[in-house]
Image 1 (tube, helix red, strand yellow):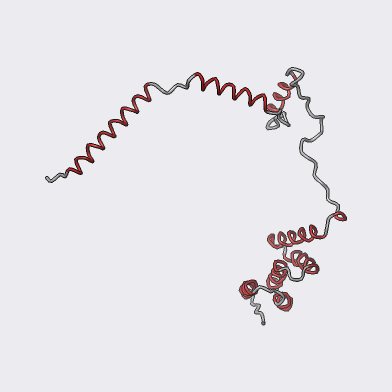
Image 2: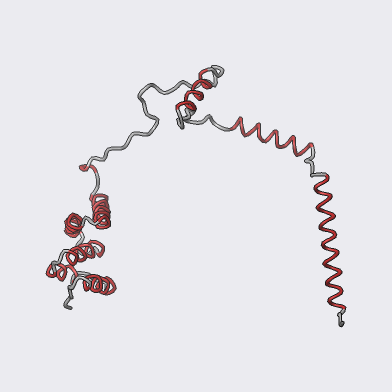
Length: 194
């Protein structure tokens, strides 16, 4: 049996490391570390200062369940006067009211972006007729909008209107858009002419 010095050294080193690990494990388990008094006092002071610095919560009423809400109200009402929080009036909501937008005051760019979003959402839902109408309305203000052109072309292909598809496909300026629309409409038997 031919054992080299390297193998013996490796075996002895492994045994020493194992023995030291076992020794440290036993020592740590026998006497867990105790924080010094300075660290404990510092942690207490830090916690106390954080409690003093924190503003009171905006909503003290727990609404997760009727029992929790009742307990929360009871605790708040019997607190010292300076800490007491009165419940909101009955029927009031803690939720911020929804803002109403007057279409007359919204600028044209915001209306256009909302129209684009509406057209995209209608198309994604499969409401193709309304999506096409909305996209055509958006194309009146921005005739080169690729997304709206793609919607109109796609809907025309889905509904079997090759003339409308060809008209708006030819308005697409990006060759990648044209190629993608050609593939999509090809599935419905519509071929475009250059």
